[in-house]
Image 1 (cartoon, rainbow, N blue to C red):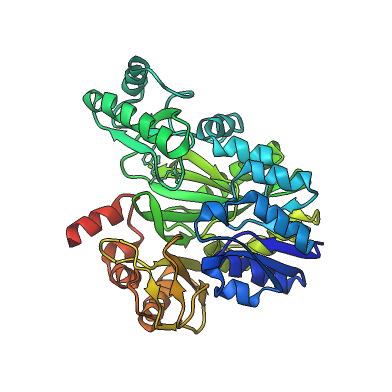
Image 2: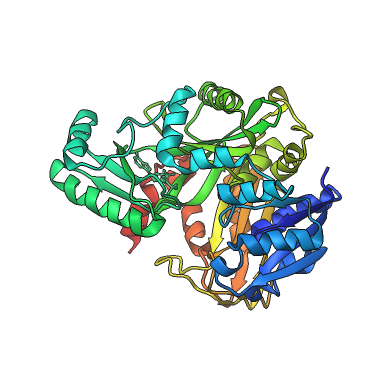
Length: 447
Ligand code: ADP
């Protein structure tokens, strides 16, 4: 087991990882920018190293500084959290070259899945169902038109290097296609430094369903069931649940087994998430994330298994603590992402939190790095916390969620809490009857 882990992240996820390390008796080092000197994870860590000024590129994305912090403190492993360097293959390779363990998969696996075209090809080869579309990158308009007419409109043009819901354009007719192809390519080039784009069928009413997988480091793969993340705004997840209200036990076990087998065949090690769109009983792979997800706690709630403990065990060579047959799904869990944003316009609302009071009681978990008097720096993601609620079934979970949202107090800034208070009272949400476009339509109606 590791002696000392360096946490290369900030906010709620840095604290989340720190808690797991403490439970396992592992020393912790955190790195932080000058803007985060007062952050909770800095206060609670055994050691902290300031690695630079506020902009991420000078601090949380500065590989050189982070490796230096490992050397100075003698950390033998790095947990990257999500975002920042968590899916940076070069970072994983550099750490390996310094004999520091990256708590995640190999640089090569990150590289394959980071390139969406390559990821889709790999998924297909591993027997995972994919969205119909081009076989690789598309550059010529003529070729784009041929593929689009083959698969049928509407189609979506996606950046191979895309992420965070950016770099996607929908074309409803052949007339839209030319402009969509050109804008997608130039936007991808500007945003990701790579203008490769591909085409796939645009599904009209899908749900976003993702499977939590793990490679144990010895060539075996397991799955921890699925999460339904269909409630999205601008392709960004807002509310996540496990299990999905749309799947039955047979579908769950079928897609889970396909994913677990693929992970084993790939020789993948550590945590991963295989994302699908699901429509009319069919699953279509869209991408794989090679890291811990923001929404991992809903899986933890229904399985009772700490996924960060498992990541650390696997990375240290100790394998998983459970086998597939030990993983049981118990009840229902929902997560609400609480952002420092206006609940209607979603514009960021940085500032000082004058009062912060979290709900409690049976089945309630709040993962957050903020506190009363905390000043939210304007430089980073606006997520300030996650409310995760567990119940014996979805009805009990919703009852508890409604009560917990009533108790939650965040004063001094605007947050997305009022949106969730509205959503728990909505009939479609109560029935679990929503697809990936539901929230956008709901917000448009409310305006
Ligand atoms: P990113 O890496 O930017 O998150 P994804 O490929 O995971 O991109 O897609 C993000 C979201 O975009 C999906 O959850 C879904 O809402 C939408 N999307 C992606 N591909 C399609 C598609 N083929 N049809 C319809 N919606 C799609």
